[in-house]
Amino acid sequence: MNEVLQQVFDVVTSELFERCRENAPNFGVTVERFQASLEKTTRKYLIDASAEPATEADLRAFIEMIQADDLFLALACADGNERAWWEFDHGNRSYMERVARHLAKTEADAEEVVDWVYGELYGTRVVDGERVSKFATYSGRGSMRGWLRTVIWHSLVDMHRASHDEVSLDEMTENVGEGAAQASFATAPAGGEDIMIEGITRDRYRKATVTSLANAFASLEAHERLLLMYYHVDNLKLREISRLVENEGSPLRGWFQRRSQSREKDPNAKIHESTVMRWLEKSYARVLQLFRDELKGPHGLSDAEIEICMGLATQDLAGGDIYRNLTGNA
Image 1 (spheres, rainbow, N blue to C red):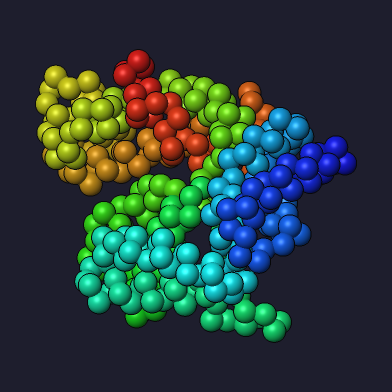
Image 2: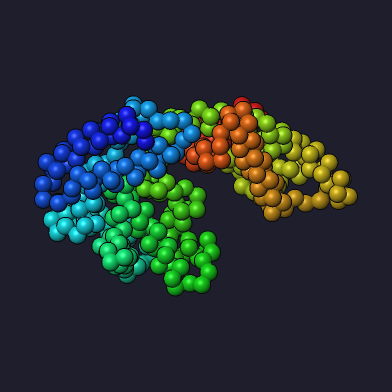
């Protein structure tokens, strides 16, 4: 952070601190503690997140998006302030219990995970003579409740792993609920502290992400686009796609016959669902490679910036469904 940005940072965060202290005068958080936390977050998610230097406007916009009162509360709780803990418990205990009951398989598991999370929030480990509170990982990016939801989910996963040598997706689904498993393995829980990308970063890389996604889909072979469209746009099942391919009138039939002949196989052989799944997996890999190549080549992005765009792509910045790109190219 250069000298000008540092001065702006000091002024803006001092004003923010005063507003927080007015709202919660008994929390005992110092301005130095508050600013140190915000500076760490600003460096990680704004200053160091891009090769382009941040502007004063970027900095002000970033600080404005911080959930300052939630951060103030978290810092006070991390320091063991009793008033802050009362406020936290009064405002969030019932919410945490509802989330736990929704994600856990049984009421006993829900109660156990809430107790576990409370222990983590208070801090059961001591490092270099200081108690380590989970609250220290909350940065104010996103709401306190969104962050708590993610903490509860990860705690459930950790609890499950602690009692199993190996954890499969099927086991996770069975033990913590199908919705929770899908949230973890397909789409991260909304509002989670670590998976949120702030508006500034989104705006900086959004155009490159959307353009590269569209070009990646446009660069696919016709059979790849059609296969993805069958599965993601028309919502056909693997079994239905395999039956379509076996139909003499299918656009995919000729491609399959060429592949079969090149491998000296019977072109009239039955198409199994597993075969369709393998084709889909190869198509996904192609989209990913084309997407990365586009970002690295024409857009000149670094590996770190490409990862940011990957995160934006999974949040579907193209609007509605990223597979809508297929409808204009198939």
